[in-house]
Length: 225
Ligand code: ADE
Image (cartoon, rainbow, N blue to C red; front, side, top):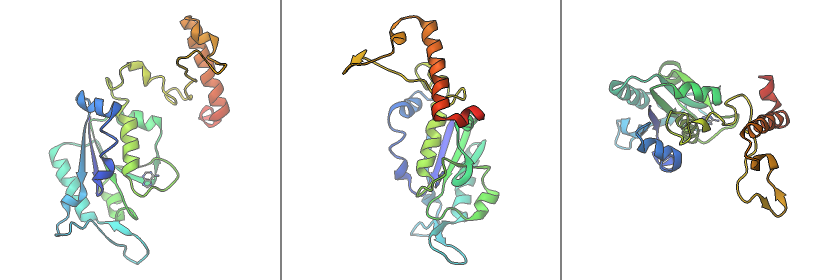
């Protein structure tokens, strides 16, 4: 997979891809991540990419011209399956959407900033919009990092144990069961005996029961879905 993130604040995205699973995925050649600075597509000396909103009001708006130039340049180099704009009023991101996007070849994630992008970008230049939750971030960069992480960890070969993404919360519509590690007893708090039994069938049954119980307690909305 090739993931291109378009942003006017590339430094905000320096950290998330340089460690752990996301770094390993790149080192293994399973994903390439390209951070594209929108300012490279500005035409003036000050590299302006935003302007005041027509009609007045607080906040700057990202202009359509640098975005259009940038997207055209990217699309001239490879075919993109989706051009996704991160926005608080987009489609709510969830595991199902992460699964769907993980099957694409090439994706663009376009980050808004300030008051967002000129509406014509949304009307004409993108294929879908995603929100990571019902709250407003300062820009789309952190949302893009969240979406990228959720997608990349699903790519075959990224996780060491191929089954571990399958046992994630939400993959089967349930939250994950509790997990424990050594010591088996700490301050008198014991790990459930079944996990120490070595009986894999019983352990699997216990995990399924716990996942269902937890989902009922914490996320009954998932069972209704
Ligand atoms: N940009 C600002 N807030 C956002 C959100 N909640 N999701 C995605 N992009 C955003």
